Length: 485
Image 1 (cartoon, rainbow, N blue to C red):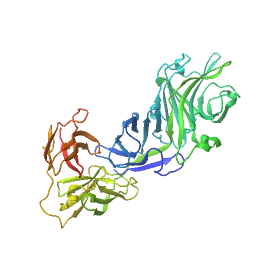
Image 2: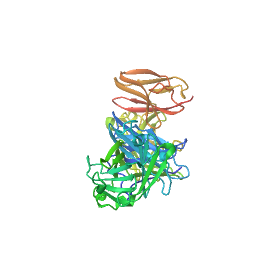
Image 3: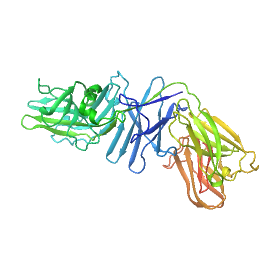
Image 4: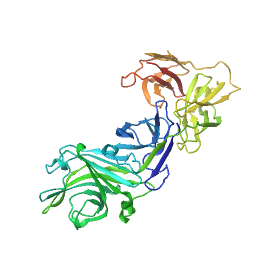
């Protein structure tokens, strides 16, 4: 299946480079299980959470994990498109800071609350006036080509706009994300209606009184009583037409700050905030994958560069569908497999792939045949072969996984030419580390290790293709094997 990626900003197309977050988004073709692998350059590490979002039974979040690919790559798999365009988003949590790309809604759709992307949940019972209908427990947001949608879920009691002489407002607030305490915000407000003074709508808000409200557009209000949720929708053009909004909003990097509010309003006391949901920076960027037939990648310009410890293998990868590969490796003499890594992450054109420097067969010039192998879907493999006419015959590395396929436990045998630190680990086909078998000094000579067939959490590894990776100070080498349950 061919899949085409769309990455654009609100209303205007923008470059895939130069954002603060989520640069160089790329994806594979559809894998045998109909998922696609999505990779992106984004911060990761201690205290950082990355999620890939997609439309399923509501908006589903799946954790993204760091992989060895680009400079700071995180990766996850999600269901691919079938017959219609599939939309995706991202969530980045860094401590108390939230950045969010909502899953875009198709134009003309009538979304349900679960179709919107969660900004944040809010604690139950933190509303200050003792009214459960003002107690926010969830706030969500999404957008289409023409509309911005926000929702508030409360603790119960519906969404009344008045009780006797006390009035209530429910707001989705929009602000400049760079302003810590903005003087002016925009808000989609559901409230009571008093002719000539206030009514539901999209407002520019410059202060706490009704005289500080300037209505700049209408909103659609829909209450989902079974879910204790209120959805508010405005036209994006109404926001875009406001000069103050345009003064800070950048279409080439479209970001807005969003949070949910409730208010109690009295004749003597005026408006007072009752509850506020945690907010975040919402990036109005579209990430979509369209279905279609898959075009296999093309390999060209293979080369072997450097000598000894600086030697490496290189080849150009070009995919007409801009798919990134899920298999990128070079196999020497049908026995020794090494990963190849992209030197760029923009798959709109050729991407140069390169091995680690100083891998055994190249460092010693001992190889006779080399096969570059790539696949963008785990099924179809494109190969390019090279022959080394000057290499001595009969040289191979003693590195093996047995039995192969692995049905229970496995034995790993390797021979180290010199003493040094070794890192021996099992990886899955997406490049995620499954289990660490050794991380210590060893050698020279024979080393035998065992793997019980379980991942680092103690769960049995699922059936499939895996890689044994052995990293030493001189080389990084792979062996492919299978697990069968």
